[in-house]
Picture (cartoon, one colour):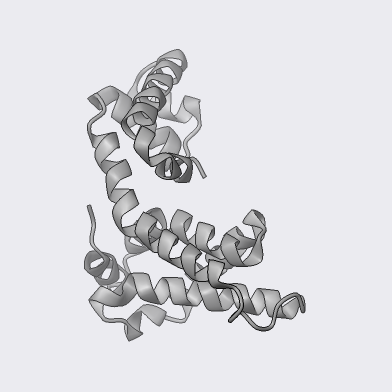
Length: 184
């Protein structure tokens, strides 16, 4: 698993692969966190996407210590979400909303522990199944693209994906929140 330090090193070198690592690791947990504030999954996605653009364009990563990336990103999302809410004059004071603190704790737990559990479950899949799951579910490839990449038929991709999802559901049955995060 790539570390926050490694992600920041890639980004600081101007390596856009670092942004890919950042996106894969933090996008879904940050969207869930933003959604706790804005209560609109599409707006939450917009907030997080805008944050990633600002993070890159304004070189916000230059201000960070290697072990503060997660905290910094969640703080940025919280502020951006609250700004969105304030612009709509729906909410101006968040002190009374303790559920937001719970959402923050939950999002951090998912980001730090949950992603590792999902990755571990994926790594335990048979090789071909794992590759199909990664292509379709992580890289968002279409069935045909995955079939071409893996040099198998589209039907094989569908079968392996179905088998992989069943296995992941079984492996993550005690962590349904993680499984749903995986399919956000």
